[in-house]
Image (cartoon, rainbow over the protein chains, first blue to last red):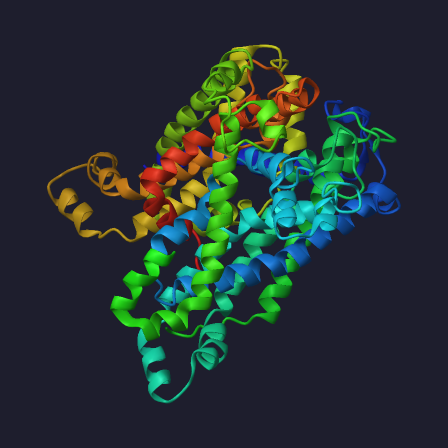
Length: 295
Length: 292
């Protein structure tokens, strides 16, 4: 029974995850003309693919962009979502309604959401930002071309963060709601105000949840792709290119970023992203010690 | 807001005042979200000329439902929509049938490799899709079925099922682990074989977990983009996310903005309607699969 029940899941898992992961690792050490090329045409180049990637300007830009998205976007998302989580659990009315609306962007297709931002919020003709800035009298600022090369990265980052906040807020909230209200009653009796309670009780007890949040954020950042593709036109845009997009163009598409076709690069990019996640995860585990507080 | 304030004063002014900054922040954010969606809805019922004149909210020429019928028919949204529906529904059903037994076995029995399989599934949830997509493409391309519509659809469904197996299994695993063992013991005493016990007793008992995870799978597969972009290389195969992207590219040349917003709404509506009815279940389930 055990075998029969497990077999389908494990077999498909091996086909879709185990085998491709092993093969990708191997591929990253070879020069491969096309993804579909037979194994005997592969040329072993050692770590040549990695060296080549890190001397390619556009890939370095892509890594720099994704690092900025991870760090700056992470700060913005985790802070705002924590703030929202704290506000929603502080006993305000309509909590369920607010929570549902804030989470709503997460269930919308990223393509649809990015289109809404791109074609409406940032539109230079009838956009929300333009109308809003015009309405409060900042006509000069209203003329800004938000998706012009010098602003597009920030436009992309804010639009992306907007969509991610709901999810992280829910993770924070589940952590906050697990803390027993008795602690707060006791602290209030002892004379601690709301801010002190937050600083010395809520935050330390949320360490484990912070770790979850950072992990989830890193995993979703590593797959960052749709937004870049929508915010750049057909050709690669220096402001928004990210590693996955570079890989996609390198292997499946045409584009001005492709200098030399080599599926080994694509594999190496996958490995680099994976290593980044592992490193972040390890550092998190070292820095944020779960004290296994019982609460 | 003024009305709300009056209601509040009846309760406890002091408490509400203390929370006022929180209310302001949240209400501004929620308002922004609602304006964003509301405007897109309005624009999808307007005309391109009205949108550019900044009159999308005034409907000077009435409501234009033909944007939807046009996008649905001529724009090809119908095909994408039906594809997505097929992929999502079939994949969700297969995922339940494949993952529920696996999750049950992993949660209930101790055997060699149990921990390894669980660790493997959990780690797989953190593996970037870029790690697996190249070999998969190689295999699929070498099978020579990229030009066969039916075979490609089956391949796509297989891939959607495959990438969602770790998440679905782990989610259901925690669910089965929390069910009491007494039912199985009673069934065993009455002479019910284990396999039958699972399908007749435990599977129905896990119903609420199965429904939650299915909603998530449906939303994920409906919105899936990267795999579909690579493996669905034909308009007859494309699901909504990729189809919409293609339409956006062409709309920028034809300049049919109202039609574009209508297409966005059509893609947005199914998951939104699910959310309208099931938001409590969805929100409750988000953190269900994660250990804090």
